Image 1: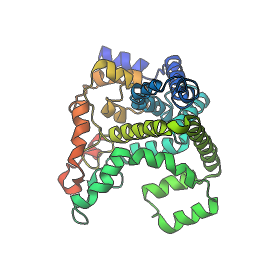
Image 2 (image 1 turned 180 degrees about the vertical axis):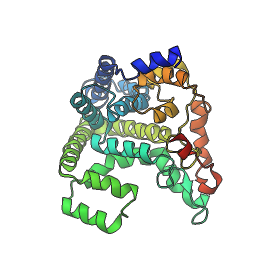
Image 3 (image 1 turned 90 degrees about the vertical axis):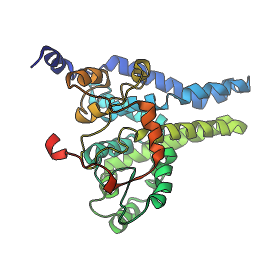
Image 4 (image 1 turned 135 degrees about the vertical axis):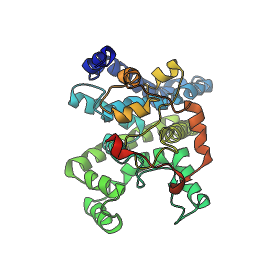
Length: 320
């Protein structure tokens, strides 16, 4: 093993707990400012304070990057502390931690399989024009909207939810797998608690904004767009069937650090147990390559849905 590889192997498991906790505190403060402090104390003084929401809305994706660390048990080395911080951040993000966590981990398991791809459509069964509305809704707002709205469903009686799953969801579908987990007693209880806290948090904020409620709505729409639009940027038009494949996208160093190196998404999919702070070293040791620029890749999504038949087939067996 080369010296660089040996050094990386000895340190790749270290989690920057203190730094992550500072970042978590920062994002808690940012959210409390956006949703409580601004409408309660600053907007009554001068409406111009509302413009501070613009730069803060732009840190939605770095906020998700830190929450993503908690999802992978990489925010704190103590699993209970990791889960607690993850749940707090998830409530502020707008969705229960349990829903975000399992959805994302299942994404790693099913990445680029036909049941999971965002931009796929089967030319034998549909057309690009027919697939376009659902695709663009998903990448422009739908992903985040579903995450925020879905907890409401879980306030229904468990028997109703179980009946719906058994009747309408096929056994091996992504939805059925997720629902089966979420209907467990502990999972359902956690989702309901976090969902109630999320709804209470958002309801309080709308009440505090009063006649300025369009501001908080605009903030949530901006967050929804940024989260939804940049979620699939690393997977768009990549090989079908290669569950380990994702793009590494070139991004200026300051922005990459702000994003917690999330642009090195290909390295993350191959090494999902590596903390964000070690991804650049892993990229170097594993001779990683960039598959284009971050912003160019994002804009390329406007090319629309792609037929499964037109996408390259992945080498999942070879990688495994």
